[in-house]
Length: 287
Image 1 (cartoon, one colour):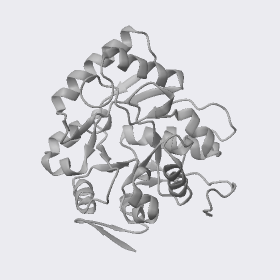
Image 2 (tube, one colour):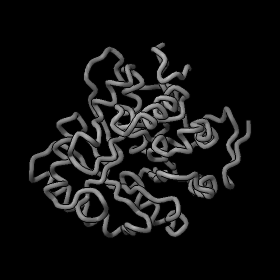
Image 3 (cartoon, rainbow, N blue to C red):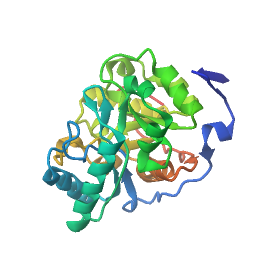
Image 4 (cartoon, rainbow, N blue to C red):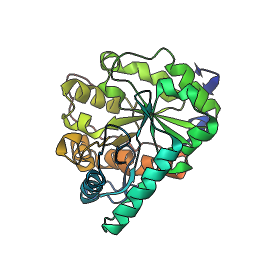
């Protein structure tokens, strides 16, 4: 099957285009995961609606480290109401990394951004690359809006793919249009777009509609990683460990929280999802 998104054309079965390898590295015996990576947080102080002070940033960092996270991406909003620049991210990240080190918190805070879809055409390729996760991964976190299906979504994601970037859609399960028809994301995933679920959606803290949709996307193979989207250190933001627990499949949970995020940050091929063991039906949806 041919999939056309913008100017980017993917042919089914092209392993290079879909960037898939047949391997995964997680343990499936129920032992604790090591190397958990959270690629979505608002830990930088004073730049958006996340941390306000450095104390807030350190509290988020401590909570992440205590939950077993060893790498946390700082992904401030880049959109109309928060026009965060590359320089602002760089300076705030340097301060947070220094504060985390001084506090003795065992956490590697890396760069990134959560870019609004309407902001994408305003950014140069140099700015997009600088705002990529880890600063060199070429993976760009794109914010899926809470309301409505953006008319320019396919065009803008196609442009990112054409530029050799790897788009990651953040928390689409929260959007009512996606909740009504989760399969609308399938053509984007087939073209090489990655999908990130929020931990609180899986645990139910984000509401039952978001939870139902998150598990539908998980069951249908339309998601690739889980992140907290932490704005505060409080439990309402969800925890990576809690999300892994509710997935109920150790290998798949590790793929979502370790294997895929590791590949994203390192800029390597996304490992193939491990076989999913049979589990009970959820919310009236079957596999």
